[in-house]
Length: 465
Image (cartoon, rainbow, N blue to C red; front, side, top):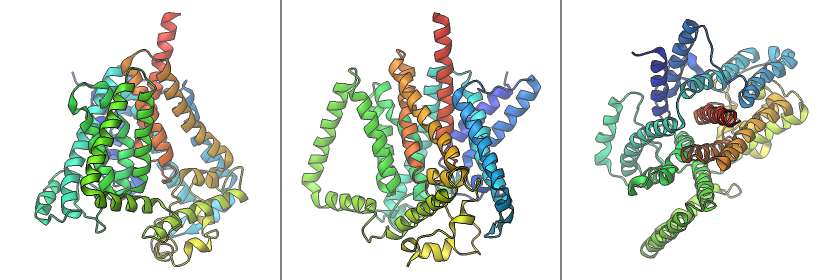
């Protein structure tokens, strides 16, 4: 018999598959979630969860868990911090948007990810075994990656190598839901996402799940998911993905090296990689050096390169946020209110000869608000040291708890899950240094799994005692 639980669980996994699909025109009233295919499945799933809870007369939330309590406290603090700044919030108006309207939109955005979706994710995993979580999550994520990879390979052939004959084949993907083919004119790929940074964000979200195949499977094909991630990372040209996925891979290899069971495999893998790289370097040294120079140049924030404008914009936004924090250190200026104050704090070195500020961020006709490009500096300016401290502690607690549970576990599936969560939280936590939105699905479904692991550990302790 199909139950409501089966339906919202199926909708969740459909959303998990569609996480990278955001290159389409959605429903405008959903704000920043309008082009996120996953959000539609999650929202419908949450609606069915609510119906199921009403019919059963019971709401299942992990309200006794410290991480969940801290998330709720953080959400509450954003309201309190905004109330402390209510006079300025009511007076603020910029880009055809009032301060109170901006707060409402940003509060909805926060609660959708940190409460609505987290509640759905928790109810999906709470009755699943750890083996089911590992197998099902990873299989669905792999299916989505395979689709994105096939699309990305054809896109690479067209955009990078100029094989225009494959463009009609690429166009066939538009028959699939939520896909709208668009090509980058700078020789980069974005696969099924709407832009290069979005593809990078997706790869950071799924990389740990794909790395885990290396340690849980015996087939020689277990390396393929990792190679697909690395292929998309390299040809996307995303600086954020290059840094974060590389960091995640290093954490993964380091964790395996300190495990006696996998140390020899890591050594052999590194040796094989060096051998392959050495052979490629001998036969095509010039190309490899040129590619390496471009990658290093893209990460150099001091040189006058093609990335200079975007680099100055990012650092200028973050600088302005810190100036707001200096003036409002305790409560900040209120959730979503940063821009109303930031427009007076832009440094000259960031705005001078920078078309992004003149055309986009200072242009009152373009109603989208300028990003901060850093969730941490944004929270410092909007929620003060208290909100910032709560948020950072939540991220720290997720990372430290994943590590501790992994080191104490004797169950292989649990160890694998803990390693996945550890690498995911590190990558996504670092990624928040480049993004300023709460819409990081990976954080919230990994958090739900972590809460599940904590509850399982408590049960096992009680059983033993």
